[in-house]
Image 1 (cartoon, helix red, strand yellow):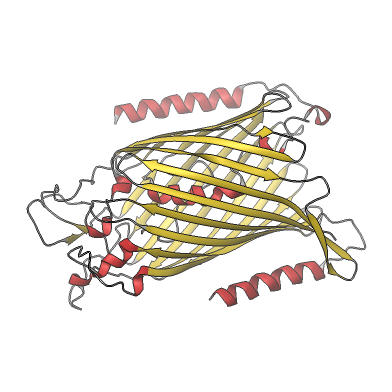
Image 2 (cartoon, chains in turn cyan, brown):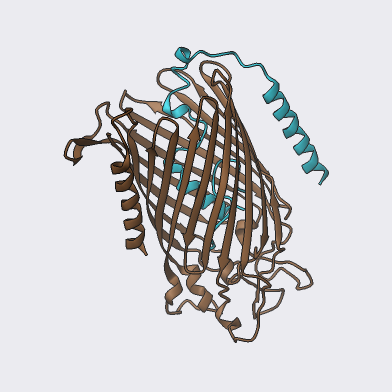
Length: 75
Length: 397
């Protein structure tokens, strides 16, 4: 339990650092690389099936936009 | 059911195509993705037969997603599909002694039909979304609803999204055949409630580097045992039914970092730490390296590693003593590590793969073709292979 709590503290610390960090202000015309379709910060459309089966075959799920509840999938 | 589902989707699509007043503004294309997934798995630890026995399963899953820009600020997104599956382990619900000569019953094959809708309103910095969904299968009817809220910085370099979704699952309690005497009810409820909440922060860190962090909080209550999962206690030849707590809280935390290395290579990474109130913990790391072979052709080699520590209530076949309050032999909740790897390809010519007229003066463009092949190996012996094919068609307006 203590181990889990210390991990949570680390996560919280990381969150604060992430939110507090001062990003460079990138102009729209400088976003050529960031606007590439493979720079999207989410799974691709074909990966939805895999996120779904992983949520059944692995006890751990979530934090990636995958399914977190609903339906059986218990086979 | 499939026919009714197809008609509903078709009516929505046709209605949205014809209902727009395109005389005032130039609307964006309607984007339709047709996806087909084939999945096959095998293993030797089926929970239906108490943690031993076949886990052979085949699933074919066609689906469709439709993204409809209604005007410059509103979008309707629909997705739906059907899973057609055949499952040897489901078949063993009616095979109490794991007899290899057992003749298949009706539960060996079935379908799951699902449909989801999201309505989004966007302005300069804010985004609001409303979600509705439903799925039907032989033993579960599921309904869901939710909201999402997003806020972006003025320069669009940072953003935060919050999503909350509620699932109501209504189960038909199917017990293993030897427990169906019409007199006993082993489980207190046939309803499962799930609330998924998620907060995601994303940021552009440099011209080539972006990242996001996600923290989810998931609460489930009600029926969390699966009624047809068997458990065998030490020395017992007769089974009992899996028994799990009626409450579970999950705390996954995810981190994504994408880096545009150069004109050819991109690096996509994902890490997740997971813990829940059943004592299950997990770490997941995934890397994908999109490679631009040409302007139109890309390949996506990927690898994913996952390890997890078992839930407090898990023990294999004939290891539970019978004095525990809760017990399961479902190896999805066991200690294991898994490796997933494969390759994706994407072909998207500048002027599309082809075009056709869908009305007198309107054209649809077949924009891209995507294929992904995946192999999954779990250290307890479960293996899975899957392939997914997708077409994107843009309907001009």
